[in-house]
Length: 54
Image (cartoon, rainbow, N blue to C red; front, side, top):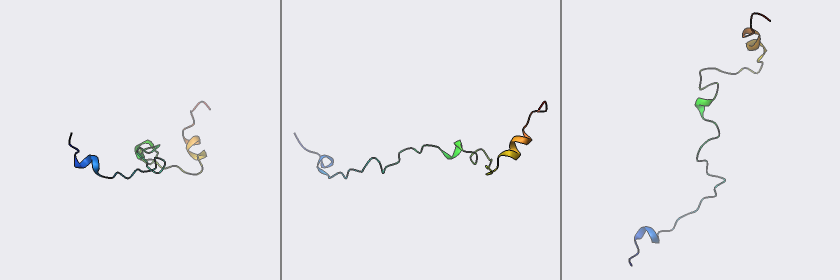
């Protein structure tokens, strides 16, 4: 049986806690990704979107 060079090469193992494979939330899944920005005070938006029967 022959050993290939890939089997002999050293492999540095990385701590899994430091490696981020996928982010928890993508940019498309945020208000900015949808073309909106969030204000600190959300009252004005809620009053603007209030139904007419209120």
